[in-house]
Length: 462
Image (cartoon, rainbow, N blue to C red; front, side, top):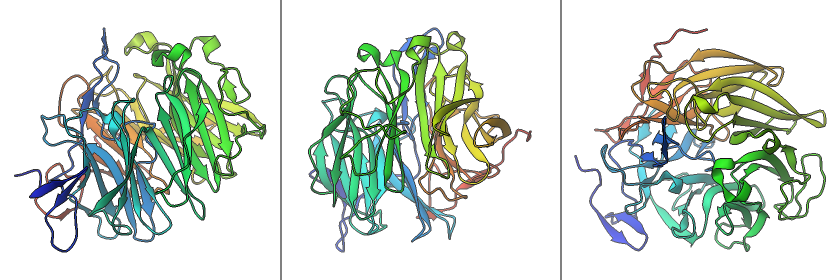
């Protein structure tokens, strides 16, 4: 079966022949991208496997739109099971029909095999869907696309091209976009820009430049919070410390979480935004997710490690929940896992907080990801207990479990699988809120719309 429908090429956009309207091509199924960094040591690559929902710094990649009762999502796809050809994909899960359409190719990366070029997603107040495609370094540009119709994925137009990596766009009702991104100006430095309409953008402004950073951002009302680590001497393998800053006026003013006004950009590692000096403890910091409690206080999920290389030498790799409460930062350990890049997400809706992530060893024990479990946190994340494993006896590790914005209980976590040791197929998955229902998106589709296949976990509940 041909992977593409009959198409022709226009500048920077593949379009299908359609006399009524220009459309993007569709794929014949949900095929995730497989990737290896190629940085090997005794226990394998630093990270590798099915990385369609990579990285933790592409935020958000899924959004539930109640107006149409659909969860829209983007991911890194590929052309064939044995090919590493990155396609920027978009699709949705229809909560009314419980079906997915054939996914749409927003942009063909034209031979790039690196999911660092994956995309992030946003939806504006008029329902237009925006896809922010990451570039890489200063050699591969990023792109901004907008859907041709509200809540429609059939066609997209390119709005902007420029230097942008790790895209994190946020739409603020009545104000427009505040867009957090990374530029390789002196290491991986953090910037932001704003736009009232997504077409005209303010000049990029530097937020932090202390040798390099990886950040996670989130919105609570009109408040945007960014949490990030730093890279001593520009070395990403020495990533450490955690910082937190916030703005309530679209970047005009930045403060600490306690409200102390900051001089931006931050250039000294020892500044008022520092949450904890992990560098002095010789520990590494891998930020997974950022959320908020019911009062809007930030809640951070991070893995704290002792070595950038995979294998037991870096143990313990501790999953930590870091919560601003009662005027101070509180640190609570959840569990331990086997890899620095065992990325999961934290959910703070309801009385019981949840973490869904690959905390359990998988078939490639020391590789990226593993088997996925659901953890429950009582007393706002002070006490944690594993509820259940939601995958088991898998043949490929599961990795990069992502939390949709405004997550619907039936499409609550989204991730990919892949063999961490060698090139393999990569399938896309999602689960419901409790982790009792797990679904695999169809790798090959014979119909225009199909229901995802439910997978029954083989492990027992605890």
